[in-house]
Image 1 (cartoon, protein in one colour):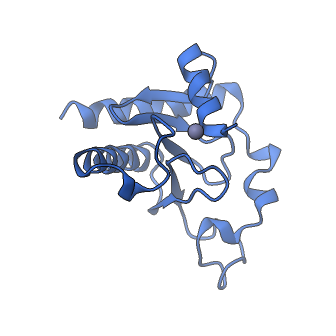
Image 2 (cartoon, protein in one colour):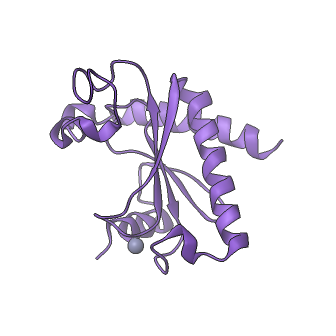
Image 3 (cartoon, helix red, strand yellow):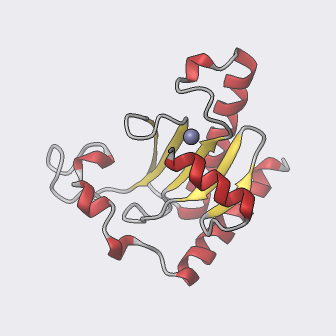
Length: 155
Ligand SMILES: [Zn+2]
């Protein structure tokens, strides 16, 4: 079983509370845990490929273009100092972008004196229950991200 496919199935069933918007190549969702406030993901629509370079060039460019629009909308909605973009896949090979809004000090003293990728922070801190948004916070975040996304998509 694939966690990303499960989440996409929930979007299709209307039962995924994190779902923000469907684009041509993927689905925009807010992250379950919000240590990095505004953390969002862009999930590729199907599980047929595990590497960007397996997509034909037109599809690859569409996917990358849409991801960059989602990142821009995330930055506008949550106003970080910097965006981080990550496509990993050792846990879930299904193509999905982690879009992390970053601010100085957000990994404490981890990394090299507080400088480094999000993964310098221990997993139990990134995925801590106290970083889960309340239903009200989640609604507010989804609304902010959707508003920015729609403005960018309608330009
Ligand atoms: Zn999958």
